[in-house]
Image (cartoon, rainbow, N blue to C red):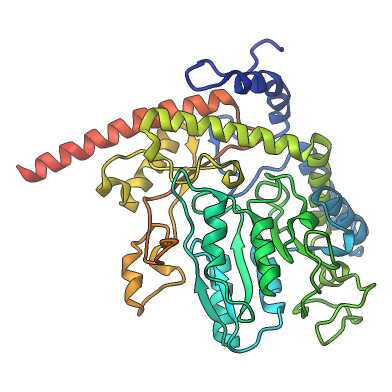
Length: 474
């Protein structure tokens, strides 16, 4: 083991196997972290906002921009099929099933608007979707006369994949549910959903599956053909750490063991390809990924850099990256639970199938503080300004799927996550979500420091709140 290796300083929170894992892997990831030019004065725990390009990728990316500035004529710095092949290799898909998009929002727009909808169809959606997916679903509902049906997500700390699957199953109506749309992991609380099991439910009901994988690519070892999902929208610039404005679309283009059902009709809504069937069908030899990647003059240096960073992740090993980020996240959860109690964690923590590298928590024990967006925003801002930790937080509140003039919108307070009870579907928002990402450049020591500073900061804010209340009462 190298001198100064980043291993847990305390056995109170670590098992022997966890300590052995960190002792083995910390030296490698300490060295790998040096490939990023992150501000050394800030511990960046927000890959889910935007990742940092590795120096080697960023250097070649800049070289590409300079090359294009000198000679703008070439449309692409490398053939698009080459870039798509470099992506497909690590994502467990065939090149014809991969298209390059501008970002997850762009990918979701193409996918959801390209499905052949009929008036009266239903789209089954979790209430915990990102505003980008939410807005697209609202638009297609208004345009095509599609009914939005919600299902409640089990989010308690002991929730299991079985509970999640059952919550989805009970809301499916075979022949009427046209699409099941969900994010995995969910952005508000980092809960991964059992994609393959949800896909199996959809196949049994004759429904299409669409997954928002903004936080999937780059963090989780992707095996898209094995997921059984029909369409994935994946970010290139978050956990995958590519350039901003890049994304990946997966379009299942053949029968797979995980999804042997016929391909759904799908209409391209953007692109310059002229050999596209106009009825939404797909001939056996149709390269739909190539067709969806032909549009205008996208910045080809961006595309090549996305291929470069995907190749780098493959070189490190995507399973290895997933193991590192997930083990760090588990270690952070243990620290938060030890400092603030089990109820501080706002996500399932026992079933590995529901875990990701996003840690969602709220350290405050009093409901008025836990539910106050301004109070929690102050916590985040001071944590950055005074301690140098950057995290994210919040939810869409009454601007979710249930919105005014629906009277239930008032039951989803501003800044909170608008979830519903899995059994009754009654509004069930939970505490203000604070999110810390365990990124591949982070370390065990940083997780310890974060918990310690959060504990100190929380105590200060609670003492200040107590003094303010006393003054008001007097």
